[in-house]
Amino acid sequence: MKKFTLAAMFLSMSLFASAQNMSVNISSINGTNIEKYDGQVVNVKMNRYMFTGWNTVSFPFDLSANQVNEFFGNDCRLEKLTNVTAEGTNMYLNFQNAKAEGIKANTPYILYFTGEPQDIRITTESALQAGESKMSFPVNGFTVSFVGTDKIMNSTDIYGIFAADNKESKFVKIEGTTGCYATRCYMTIDSNQDVTFIPVHNEMTTGITKVATEKASDKVYNINGTQKKAVSKGINVMKGKKIVVK
Image 1: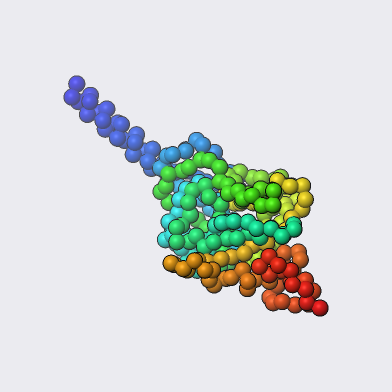
Image 2: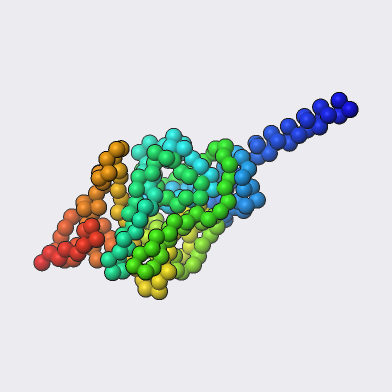
């Protein structure tokens, strides 16, 4: 009986260790059935292609701030959407620096990558978390949502960042394309009218509530939401207000 009990214990421990060391490949192209592994601590393996400039990321696992630096470079930026304001059909997306807290599972982010376009090999031991990756904000009677996906989304009612717009973090309507791949994010609005999403990048300094570095007031856009180098002739949009220069 004693030998049988010890054998059962060793078998149980072996199965537990095996489960803990399970390797799961996360596909950023085809998507992954995360529900199958929900709550399990596994060895995560994922190839994620990153463009130079702003990329969207939403992972079903955590990465610490140190891991974010390890995989994406010390000079990368990680930002989370904190609120949305509007002026007419212009939707101002206020992003906040979130690098110090790292990447949290099932949370949509934008990440600025300074390296050459390439596949990043991400490996870590982490608990996988299934569930919705979504942040929603009421704006002028509508709801704007920033959504991460674990599968391909090819709806024509979503807004994503095209490779050509990575330097500007510009979200435009996805039409006539392959759609939004897994481990990425997109914007939606429950309105039939076309809108222009304008990103504003803020960074809070420790212990101080005012906005520093990339201030919203320093950003200048044209009427189409494209960032300009400086105020120039025509209509300029600054801090949600239009400035006309003749």
